[in-house]
Structures are given as C-alpha cells and as structure tokens.
Image 1 (cartoon, helix red, strand yellow):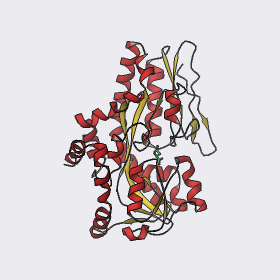
Image 2 (tube, protein in one colour):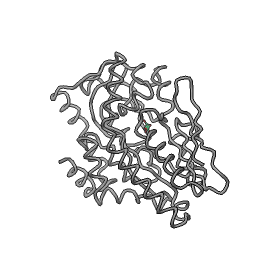
Image 3 (cartoon, helix red, strand yellow):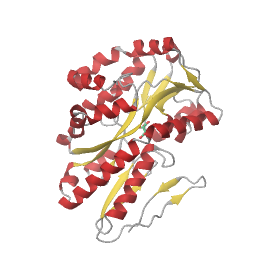
Length: 328
Ligand code: LMR
C-alpha cells in the first residue's frame, strides 16, 4: 500500500504516518522522537517511508512513528532488540549502553561544522563506527545529520562563568555530563520529550540542541535567548537489529540499502539550509540570538578542552586524529 493516511493536530503537525500496510507486506516500524515538519530527521524518515512504500510495494511497508509517540530514545533500542521496532535514528549520544566509541561525537568543539562531520563519517574510521555495536545486536546503516548545537538558559550565556551553578538538561551521554561538570554547572540526563516541561517549570535552567530542535520543541519560548556557540554536533545513526537485518531476503536488503543511501545523500545535503531556516524562524519570533566575540568563544573552547583527555581512551587516539583531520 502507498496511500498516506496521516493524522494531524490542529497545528497541522503530522503525528503518525501509519500507511495501513497490506497483508503479506513485511512491516518496518520506524520510531523517532522529533517533529516531522521542517525537521531534518522528520523529513528524512518520511521520505524513506514514501520511497519504500512505493518502490517496494507488496514486499515491505514502513510505518513512521515520530514525536516519541511509540518509544523515547531511552527505550527504542531495547524495543529493537526485542523485535518490537525495526528501525530508528537516535542521536549519537544515545548509544551509551552499547558502545563508548560514539562518545567521540560529543567532544566539545571537535568538529568545525556539519561538513567536517560528514567527511569524517565517510572515512574508513567513520564507517567502522556503523559496525561498532554488532556484538550487541545492533547494525548501523547510515549517518543522518542534524546540526551544530547551540546553548541556552533562563539568563544570558556569553562566557563559561555564566553557566556556573545552573542546571542543564543533557542527552544520555557521560561526555555531556563531563562538559557541564567542567563548567561548574549541574547536568541532568533527561529524555527529549520531557525537556520543554522541565525548562518551563524550572526543573532545569538550560539546554543545548540544534536550531531545528530548539525551534521544533519551542525551547526559545522558555529560555532567555539562544547563544550561537556551535560547541558540539547533533547527529544521528540509522540503526536496525542485526538479527532482523540478516534475516531479510537478499533482494529486499539490497533494495532497502539503495533507497536508504539515496535518501541519506539527498537529505544530508539539505541540512545546513534547514538549520539556517530554523534559526531564522526562531529570530522571527522575537527571541534573542546572541553571538560570541572571538575572545568569548576562545574562553569556552579552553574551558572545555580537558574533557577530551578524559574520553580519548574510549574513542581511540587514531579515531580522534581522523576526526580532527576532517576539519580542513
Ligand atoms: C535530544 O534528545 O535532544 C535529541 O537527541 C533529539 C533528537 O533526536 O534530535
């Protein structure tokens, strides 16, 4: 079947894109946590669904469940290993229980921009990371980009000392905990769906995320402006269970691989534009966007550099070198 049957909220936001799979079609449930409208992951997942359901009609059928409606990122990988969901694209910070190699992506100020991330991921060291969790039953299929991370709180943040003593929501990554510890702040791991409420009620004071997530989740509404720090990256791994993947018919696996790689190339090259649009949309609401002077930025870089040493043994010195070399 390939007729879309999405349900919509009053705001027009797509909630589910359950296509009504036909009998005999193998169902691929794809669970993720972001919105679908103007979001890099939301758009890529929907495009993947559309293409699979057209080009593999009668054989395979994808159902995308966005907005944490099926699982949040802390649960989706367990569900995948149990066979309850077949694909997801969690951020690279959410694989802590399966490998420490992906901690590389959370090193502060490691990558200059998403193009550098792309070059590293395309290198042999980057591609090897897709198979870093096969021993745990997870197979990485592709990297999907989101954007550089920006920083915000309920007060202006211009120098590292401004973050001292504040509570920050972080993704489920020990590197991110170390980053905010290093600033003298109080990091708190929390799932994505809980962040807006936590900022609103003061359970946490601040957060870090891509422009598209800050826009899509409306974090700017409950923060005192956003500081353009580009201090880290938010990127995703499209992942499946090795057991499910190895059990596919040869022809189905080949077609899925080709469609996924075409969708990945198409959407990854559009991502910088999408992030820029999210930034402009935030500014258009009247929310304050703060720029750092070169001297202020240097203070953040220096304050956070000790975090690298702590986690280099986890990621490997060679891999770290390859990542640095991707900044041309
Ligand atoms: C987050 O938890 O902040 C992000 O990983 C959410 C996402 O998938 O973009």
